[in-house]
Image 1: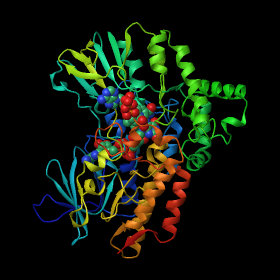
Image 2 (image 1 turned 90 degrees about the vertical axis):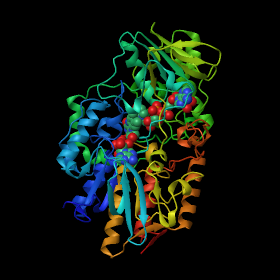
Image 3 (image 1 turned 30 degrees about the vertical axis):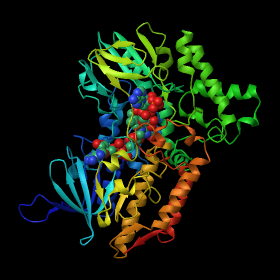
Length: 543
Ligand SMILES: Cc1cc2nc3c(=O)[nH]c(=O)nc-3n(C[C@H](O)[C@H](O)[C@H](O)COP(=O)(O)OP(=O)(O)OC[C@H]3O[C@@H](n4cnc5c(N)ncnc54)[C@H](O)[C@@H]3O)c2cc1C
Ligand SMILES: NC(=O)c1ccc[n+]([C@@H]2O[C@H](COP(=O)([O-])OP(=O)(O)OC[C@H]3O[C@@H](n4cnc5c(N)ncnc54)[C@H](OP(=O)(O)O)[C@@H]3O)[C@@H](O)[C@H]2O)c1
């Protein structure tokens, strides 16, 4: 059913539910509310198409680190059977094709307003409605407001002195031009060696005249070992859909493989080496699943860290470069672990240089390039910022949300995000945050937590409507308890011990240092959410 205008000639649109964002989250949420509950639901999306992350991140080498057969919706067997992946890890254009396939198959695009950036959302308590405004001045009203803005959709372009004086061109990987960038004959500087930088550098180096990689924190990486999918593997995926889905839904990280139930110290050093070697040869994130205690025990983690550092030294021919790359100061996988195709090998090319900006920090951008503290000058035609995102809270705070009694989300989260189950914030009735901070989100193969959140929110709204209730909001006590639990779950792991992790907000100057995702695992999290619902939405107030 189409949305209605409030009054003739008015630009206000009134719907039951407004969803912000048209990536995996927003697409499924629209389908669930519109086609399962029969609500009038619309999506507002800043981009000109569906895709979210995959619409924006078109940089060279952009590719999944989830394996393709697990990076897709599982809520509909019919939808799953209508799609076949071509590679072990899909490249950005293939994920875009997949999400367009989903949107077309479910006829979603007619209810998505593209090119529509939300700039404000205010809760009107008298009407129990959310008033939403967009950059272009349109106004919407809705009973339920659901953010599907992603955890990684706000590009972080560092504020480096002299930035505006640069005479060449610069790009952030998360806002990559659709027409692509021609690196031929160009001196390119790449700032950043996270998952993005590690994917981009080998591809940029293939065409650039010269690539200078500016590394602040050295990083681990395991080879992806991407390959085209064989007919046998495709048949396995077709025939084993229920088993694959069951595995994804019962593992802590939502991947289609299980974490081995053994400790690093259950095996001899020789056996451990053999296990790591086999995992290195197999490639991908499964390396992290070789032992159950890699993220729990520093001594256990050291064995993996030493193995991976030795690999870097073996691959990179110049010992000085190898040492800068292997000088990693944090446990393996305590920051999001990248996987790569020829990343360390790239530093053996004559046209690639590594600069250690931990030892010699970037001081300024000049008209000619990048200058470091020691006075070194790096002349550049193009700068690629692979500098990540204002993760998790960034996209939510940019919505300028104002809840009950004028309380803003920025104020409520001044010392870091506070919510219940990562799903709702006290003082913000009927606002739901898909993969919000305090939920497992970025610690998982993300389609799994996205599906779980969408289904929980949909069931919750169905519950309210079935009982004639008009709003839901967590109690402050439930929020306090959840924040404590999120902190405890993080503290039981090595994850919060990395001072420069974006999980902690440490990549954004001035951001509160709070471990944001829920580290207790997706299985446990799902169980808690199910119990809360089964107990009549324990911890929530409804009216
Ligand atoms: C390069 C890259 C690779 C990744 N690879 C993987 C992977 O292999 N496996 C994995 O599990 N995860 C991966 N991720 C994480 C990825 O973000 C999620 O898997 C998933 O795509 C998130 O979907 P989403 O719909 O929740 O959010 P997004 O895909 O981020 O979509 C959010 C949408 O909201 C829109 N939006 C935001 N703010 C506003 C606003 N104010 N107004 C209107 N619209 C707005 C954005 O334009 C965007 O389209 C990757 C992330 C990046 C950056
Ligand atoms: N599927 C995939 O393989 C894939 C690919 C890309 C992204 N992703 C997802 O997106 C997340 C973000 O990845 P990302 O690589 O875009 O961001 P990131 O992990 O935050 O990495 C950003 C890099 O830029 C550096 N940096 C930031 N500001 C800097 C500055 N002012 N000066 C010098 N260096 C600076 C960081 O150094 P410090 O470490 O010192 O801060 C880091 O090396 C990943 O963790 C992952 O979840 C996944």
